[in-house]
Image (cartoon, rainbow, N blue to C red):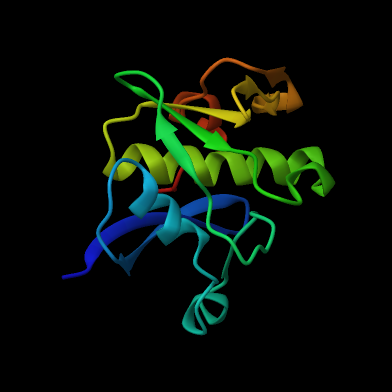
Length: 140
């Protein structure tokens, strides 16, 4: 039986929550697969898009602590502008923290933290939370 996951897409300069069905799995895998799914036909018609780079493979990650998820760097992430990296990270953080125990997300390459932009483009390697992307939070 499919799981229903909350996924955050981009609408204008803010995130908007949508639901997607995904096959069950363990840890953060189901929610990352839901976020990695291509934008459906109705979503662009509603003004929704993703800042994540297109990839044939879903995002992958693990819980690295009781409230932190480590997510592997998506292929093509390094080619995004800093502003799009910030939006992509906000999508990942809001989505992962909606349907898992994780409150924070760290982007990693192997086991090494990757710097990610937060507000005003500052780069950090610590786990980031919804509070780091409050300017992109859904309007409602």
